[in-house]
Structure formats: structure tokens, C-alpha cells
Picture 1 (tube, rainbow, N blue to C red):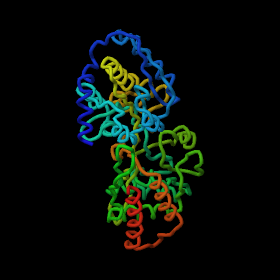
Picture 2: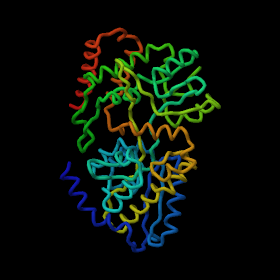
Picture 3: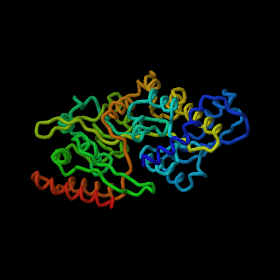
Length: 404
């Protein structure tokens, strides 16, 4: 892998460094794939950039609706025939790098990303010490929504549950989901990640759930499930008599209506096991924009410059105002409108504790659901540490088997 990346990097370095140079004007089309909801927005902004930059006047843009979740599948099917710029979810980075479907960023392009975006977004756009994409958002993750008239201390899961129980209200979290479950396991210090080959096949699994830390996490999940206030779920639309729910920014309008003047948000709380307070972690998600490798240096320079603009402060802020996408750009995050968005502020605080989601086999998600279902069913009620360790060993062995 390192040798492949080095060869690829050397091949594009000279062209990448030309991003600020004048480009010979000639008719050429730059194709962009983005989510359908921002197709018109992206086309408008891209055309604004080209019209205000005479050096790139020979280029035109074509913007097509291809969602971030489908980008890698479409690109890997035909790298050469894919879009020149495309948005994608950060969990697809490794596959795209392995397929040489991304131009590594060098010099000023890499500095643009590292200097202007939050650390989580930069990490999500990187493999090793190389940056391969331009961050577009830092807004995919989960945090705590709560009713401030009920919850007195949002930093403590024990206190949140006590307040909800006393008020006869519900606390919602989807503990039979492999996405939300990691809030406990990663918070306790456990790891679970996969490596893939150039074809996207899972080759190895780094997991240590069958450990003292894993037992702590599982005991906390069991304790949560045993609370009278607990409800398994993460959709605010389906929550009834709720005073607290773990969800993401997509639920903000529903929760605002639900809590009214008592609407409040915070990073995830800490949970306590055997007297030890442990900050919840979990997955974080980021939207990125990649540049396909180009044969023509002039077109590569135009693509790099356009990707910088579409991922820069001005456009990220405009995209937030138009579509609600949370910025990764540090200056955009400091804008008064963004700072006053309590949901985004809570998510930003939580992302400091989160781990960017990588690629996971489908079987992992099913396995995690089974573990959560067993907890909800009471299968581990009053279970010894040895029993819990055995369950986690079985879970861990299955995770490892998916990479063989």
C-alpha cells in the first residue's frame, strides 16, 4: 500500500502544485457528483467560481445527483468514467485510495485542508500522513437532546436517568445498533476496526471487546436497559413522553417541536461503572469531496481550485444557511448563526470524543443488533463478569471471522 501511494503521489505532485497557476483556456467539462439535495446549490456555486476566475474560463461544469453513500460503488465500478469531483462519506476513503480513484493533496492543497478544517474532518480525509480529500461537513454523529425542565445535569447518564424516572419520562437510545453501541465501547477504551484490500475485501479486524474495558461497557449498557425510563430507539418522530434522546442533527426540528422552550442539547454524557466515570464516545461522520486523478495538468489544476472553493469557508457557510449542512471549516463554525445552532454546537463538542466511522462488514451490524437485543431481553440480568466476558469473546471471535 505505501509503495502504491508513493508512486501515485509522485505522479500527481507536479500537476497538483499547479493549482494556483493560470490555465490555458479551452473547452472542457468538469463533472461533479453530489447529493441530490445540493445539486442545484453546487451548480450555482461552481458556475459563480468559474465566472469570477478568468484563468478557468475555458471550463464548464456538469453537476449530477449521486449521493455520498453511493459514490464509492459508482466510482469503483468505473474510475475513468466517474465524475471529476465527487462527494463521498468518509467511510469510503480507504477503498477509493486503494483503487487510485483520488488525487492525493500536496503542498498548498494539503495545507488548505489541514489549516482550515477541524481536526476530526482532517483525520477523516487522511490515510497515514497523506490527505486525499476536501472536507465538506462535520455534521454526522450523535449527541444528547434533552428537556431542560426535566434533566438537571446532562453530563451524567445516571443523573439523566434518575431525572427521567422521577418525572415519569423516557430516555431514548438505540442500544441494539452497531452505530450507537460504540458510544459505550469506544468510550471505555475498546477498539473495533477493519482493514481492506484494494478490492474492498476485509482482510483483518482490530478488536478488543473481550477485555476488562469491554465488560465495563457492556455492564453500562445493561444498566441503562434496566432503567424504567429506558426506551430503545433513536427516532424523535417515534418518541413519546420523552425527556432525553440520543440522535443527530437530522432530528433537530422534530425535537424542537417536542421540547419547545425547554429544548436543549449537549455532548453525550458520561456513564459510571464500579465508581469510574467514563465519557461516551462513538462514531463520527464527515462528508468529503474527492478529485479524480487527471491526465491533463490544466484540468487537474481547475478541479483542485474548484474543490477548494466548494469546500471553503464561503461556500460551507452558504451551504449551512441554505441546506443546514454543518461546516467543517473553522471560520464557518465560528459564524454567529452556526454557533447559535445548539444542535451543531453539541455535535461539534461530541465529535472531539468520536472516532470517524470506517468500513464494516454487513455481518457486524447484524451481530451488534443481536448483542443489543440480548441485553434488552434481559439475557444478561445479574450476569457475572465471567459470563459477560464469554459473551464478548464470542462477539469478538465473530467479528474477526468476517475478515477471513
